[in-house]
Image (cartoon, rainbow, N blue to C red; front, side, top):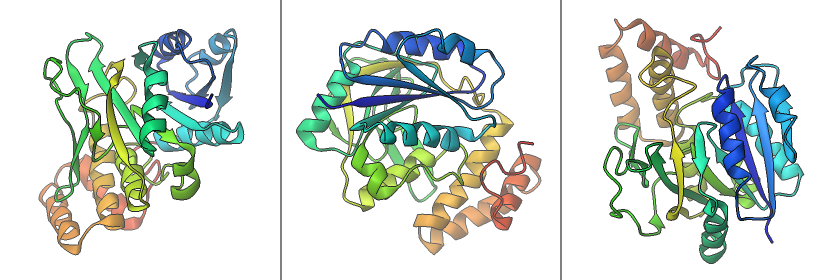
Length: 283
């Protein structure tokens, strides 16, 4: 039986993280390793997790962002000989057959990265049913978002990107493509990894037979200045790495149009000066 390591990154969402772990403990898949990484939250998560049997806890002692924190967990998983790494947001809960379904589809298709169907916590409304990437504007969209789940996206199929909220990754992807690019810190790092994986010939799939539930943006804050800063800067980073001069120039002009916005101005300045990772927004 293939080994699956689940990496859950906590940043000041202790209660959600604990619920996520408990849902994973009900899994019907037997060969699971649970790894919880904490980005120096100071929320008491370490004491709680260490009471749980079969959960490895790693304290980073710093806020390394989504990329840095998850990379530490991924490295631990690979050292432990995981065949697959399931990167999971802490504000999610899984059905008991999720990991079994993801493993079965991965084995049948040899896909490199697979994303499950993700519903909001009401268990009725779609959050993710495949990823659509608008490369001309460097914007990712979740197919079906905010629609009622009526089985309209129930086919296993290739998709343009898998959200980092629930990303099931074959070991070979990390070994051949690399880990998350820590320049991003947070946002668009999932699309970056999928883009690199596809360029290396790996298949990216959406698997609706695996279902999880998600409370959106619990750590970062949906629509926050923090989100605006990182998405603005990281769109330009993604374009600089992969896309045409025309797309880069379009994003440059867009940034100039929003130069009076202090958050976007800071993001633009940090991009131009190569101040990536945590950047200037977070102290």
